[in-house]
Image 1 (cartoon, helix red, strand yellow):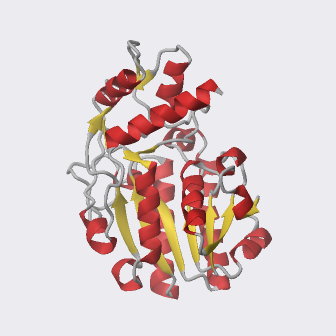
Image 2 (cartoon, rainbow, N blue to C red):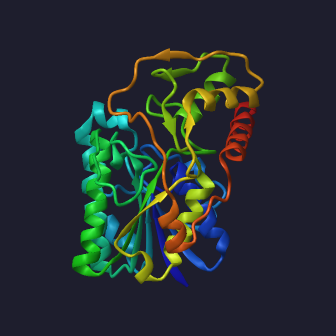
Length: 316
């Protein structure tokens, strides 16, 4: 039975990927997470079906054990958030760059065939020109964006130099169930929904006319599964956008969310955050052509599912 490893397995995206891989039924699934930002409860659905390694990517001995015999790695582990990286760039660098390098070295020694990497749309920065296409020159603004891009370049190097099949998927503004809402660095969707459920007033940083290509988490899972199975010649060593290809302003997104929650609460506006980009919109043509990616859950349906999930959690 083929072995696969998901790093960041107890995180928001990683746990959804674990569930999907377990549901296939034909894989030996391993999960790795240090549980610093990931939650053990995110794995409740699949816990009995996986081998779990509670280790850090800087634990060389633990990594060797985790990757032994593995065919494919889905590298979701990171210390996420632009604001976090602005506040503490060194810690973010250790997790996002050094951790990825350590994983690559362990994978190379173990003969891992393919790594699918969770890259970031933040690599594009605030340069003019929409939609973003993969051939654009990266112009990262924040330390987080630099770190994620650096890891991308490492993966591409390991393909060119060592022949490891690496694929980088640049995620655009992912949201959905299990996204943390209790941190200063939480995603905006999770934070707004929980604030409204608790009777508070959500905050929008800036004037709210910033555009985002919000992408429901099921689309990311779909992309990862496709990227793991597509023949090497079509995707190895390449970078792909994973998004919906639609721009939604923060103001319009908040209005739809409030309507789904039957809330009349108006948001408050605060200053823009350092390191945030003004706009985000992806072209998904390359991922569609290379490995058949498509949007399986659109923005409005994804938002409806997300709101319903947080409502259920709030009742518990």
